[in-house]
Length: 474
Ligand SMILES: Cc1cc2nc3c(=O)[nH]c(=O)nc-3n(C[C@H](O)[C@H](O)[C@H](O)COP(=O)(O)OP(=O)(O)OC[C@H]3O[C@@H](n4cnc5c(N)ncnc54)[C@H](O)[C@@H]3O)c2cc1C
Image (tube, rainbow, N blue to C red; front, side, top):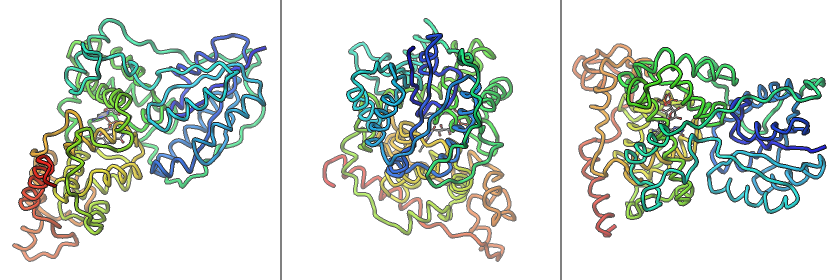
């Protein structure tokens, strides 16, 4: 009799789960599953309470789905990753485990933990899988066997590889020979602050996640390239929360997309959405190749010399959506109320924090992580380094978004702004992006802050700060 243990981490699903499928391949093996909650480590990583609630919901449906297949899910809680090594050793001893199966995580702390686990479990066969990506980090390299630094050639190489052969999806496991579990399940509760999330926006179980993916690919992906930049339109998939915790895999996204739009790989319908999925891969591959990114170091070294301002009052105004710039404030309200923010707005508010307030991008990275239901180190770090011009293939430092004209371009009539800022409900469309100009003219007092900075002056100050850093004068 052989016993296989599947260690679930950021892969909370039964369909297309490479580690789970491999563990179940042996028809007579006893298969057990384990999840280790590490609240102390999550605090260190600023995990958002909404993401914790999302994980807890998915763990409960995972436990149910595994139970129906005869696989018990053991849930343990320890403080941090170091303590989880002991839990694994004990679980392997208690259950006489012969082989451990898990899906790789590419962040540095996670990799160090996994290396320590493999060393400790010298009598257990350990197998890891590249499950959270379409193609494994290290498989798409330049002719000089280096990681690409620029997205477009990476994407072209990626698409070429996909055209040569698609990564397969694996089936959910069959019911084990002993049948479904008979004992009642105990609800999983994570010992971490929780904040409820909107179940109509974010699929609370795997079945709903797959439905959301199917509906998006059948109905909305065709308009994605025209709609995706306008936050008042429901133009994007909102699947990031599921992808971040592994309730969906990127291979499932790829296959569903190609089922509905087979020409997406050739640049037709759906190609732009596929390109976004490849951005996700780009940041994961980059982080694996450059672990300093996990330590929040900038990719472009000289940008570490920028003299950031320490300004807790301004930082708080940004966090609370009280900057006096309507598109920035509405976006921050969306984040604070739902745990999600539209991609265009993430770029605008990140640029505002860094380039209008000259506040260190790491403050924004941390705050996002503490609020996002889709918090993901690689994508978040990549997005912040892009906006702050510290990353590879980032916006050049002298490109500074004007928050007012960005609002005018992407929320022309202010529909999104009015939804999140009811204080501006009466402001006419033509003045919605600079409401105080209108309010002063007509003598209305708004329950809304005046702009906390002058964009024009802030822009010049920021340019000077970056230029001084670049010349090594800072
Ligand atoms: C400052 C900043 C911080 C960000 N932080 C995160 C984060 O913590 N977690 C996260 O998943 N994404 C992050 N992003 C990327 C992007 O904003 C979100 O993935 C996207 O808004 C999620 O919405 P969606 O699922 O509707 O995306 P869609 O437009 O439907 O895209 C499909 C999927 O592709 C991936 N994706 C899309 N755009 C990007 C991108 N630019 N970089 C990496 N992956 C992408 C996501 O997994 C997304 O679910 C960040 C971007 C910026 C500029």
